[in-house]
Image 1: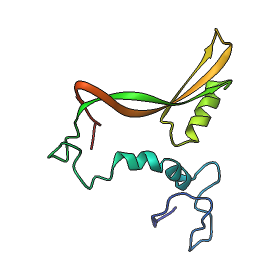
Image 2: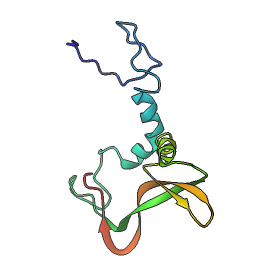
Image 3: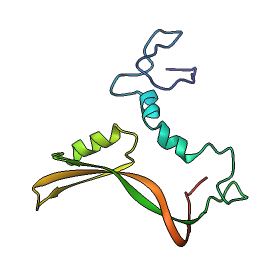
Image 4: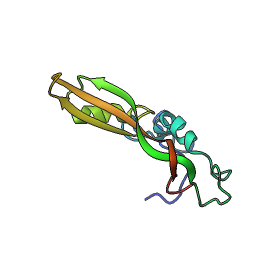
Length: 131
């Protein structure tokens, strides 16, 4: 078994300094690639160094005049299966969720990418579950 934990993210492009073995397997275990792809999304969440906008508490993150919304970021035509749509979504940073359907009128398969976000609202206050 392994008795010593090391602070490395999986990355098939880097070898462990003591063993010389790769820190990941290409196409299977590559957290460095995933973190780099999602960096913009993660950075937009914040870094916990300051309280949420309009808040005096680090446990309250309400934003006045906002409401949650799924924002469509991309529409792809002729994607022939939901599995392919899922695969494409997982490879880009502007896709948190995806949807797929066959358009019967146009005889096309459509894959949509979505990102979770907030939109303006005149009376509601909304925010994330945790700051």
